[in-house]
Length: 178
Image (cartoon, rainbow, N blue to C red):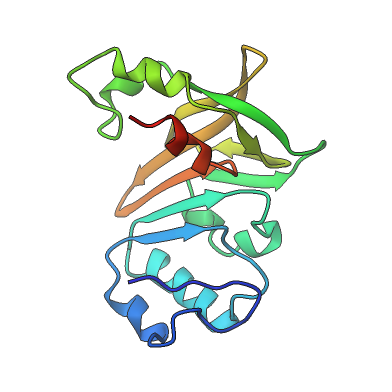
C-alpha cells in the first residue's frame, strides 16, 4: 500500500490511515520530507527506521526539506548540508567495483554501460557526503567529468539498511529503459 501526500496534510488515498505503516516491510520515500506531511507521520517514519529497522529507499531531490531530513539523517547513507550553488542537470557515472553490488549484479558485464548512458537528471543544490560505512554506487557526471558528489549510495550498517538517490526527475531514466 502507499500513503501519498501532496500540499494537504491528509493522504490522497481515502481508505488509509497511519496504521498502514505498522505493516510495512520497506519504506519508499519519494520527495520526502515536505512540510505538508503531518508530524505524527514523520515521527512514525523515524520510529520505523530507528526502532523497527525497516529498510528505507529515499529519493532526495529539490523538493526535500533539508531541515526535516535531519530527523532521519542518522539512518541515511549520506550526511546532508546546504549546497553553495543551484540545481543542475547531470548524468551518473557508475563507481568502480559496483558490478559486485547485488543491486547492479548482472551476468552481462556490458549492462553496466547502459547506466552510464541514462539521460541527465536534476541534481539538487545539496551537499551530500557518503558515510564511511556506505558504498557509493554512482557519482555525478557533468560535461563528461566525474564529480566527487554521490548520486546513488547504499548503506548496510548493523541491522539498518538504506539506499538513497540524490536527484530529481529520475522518471527520465524510464524513457531510456528497454
